[in-house]
Image: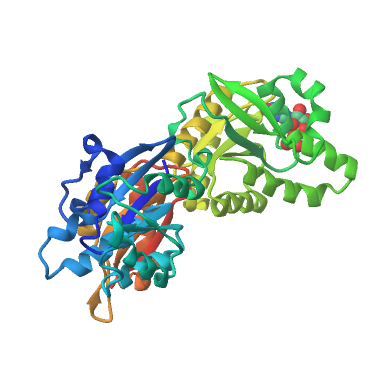
Length: 439
Ligand code: GDP
């Protein structure tokens, strides 16, 4: 679900807005200590729009001494997690100095903003709304969370900025949305043979023309009720032969295939050892943030199967730390063996890649991981990581908040990524980590 944060200084009416959007029943209060205690989250169905909303209001009753710092931290956390920010001001009070730091945070984030001039009911409600232009956050919507005025306008504004729900298929169960899969690898690894096996000879024999235009590059297929769009690597190769620019096309087609796919299967010829080209494609998969599976093709030609499997799995662990735990599946496209295992690995890689982990679980993990192995001190000051959250899925992307995080050594962020991978069982997917230093 897309996420919407309600942001603003204390007392502008954020909670009332939250309650109006969520309705009483869904307001879910997180009772963890620390920052997460103070936030409320709820799922909203609002005239056909569906989103998750985060309320940053909880701190308003907190002790005044630490209020500003913690509220700021919490607001920053909510903003990075969100696709849209509802920035709330008090239309009666106008713009106060206390509004500015929050407005500044929102502006810096680059996140789409809807400016809401709350408490605008009645005649004197509009005075402050004019002030709001000076924030540089666009036209305010005169609103009354209390009386439900401006709801229609808010709906249209949200409709405009909320990201396409298609981008986030959390809602789709298996068999719902087609999973995009590409099979890539060096020439002669056996890609065409494997694709033929999967979709059936007939399909490819009757279908090549369909794959010839540059844009229709996928074959529809189904495996155990899961719809699959398979990148038509074979069609690419046929064109390449025609064009006789095989080498050049092989590279750009690899890139196209990786961009097309959610899950990339790198097909290796098991009788030929790893080559640099294979590592280059793994780097591409990692930088494009796709899920990965490695297929060991021509397994029928391998004499010592257990020995080679052990060796190749060790190679993967050593050579591919960026996708640690990646599934390595022996198969024979020619004999049609191992295809079920391959597809199981593909769907499970897709699941891992799409996974979302709750903020409270991540923060439990964070305190244990930093407890066991605390971040180092930099020029006498200890680096402190205060808060973590998952910002996005596909691939899993986490943000850490704390002080001096820009000084965190690479080795320590590697430690954290490995720990996240272990703790939440995220093998074989790239993992992104952003560090945000807060004051
Ligand atoms: P592509 O260039 O990756 O599409 O490779 P092809 O599918 O054209 O296969 C290259 C050669 O490897 C062909 O001669 C295939 O018959 C052979 N081949 C493909 N898969 C297998 C396999 O699983 N076992 C064996 N023994 N040969 C295979």
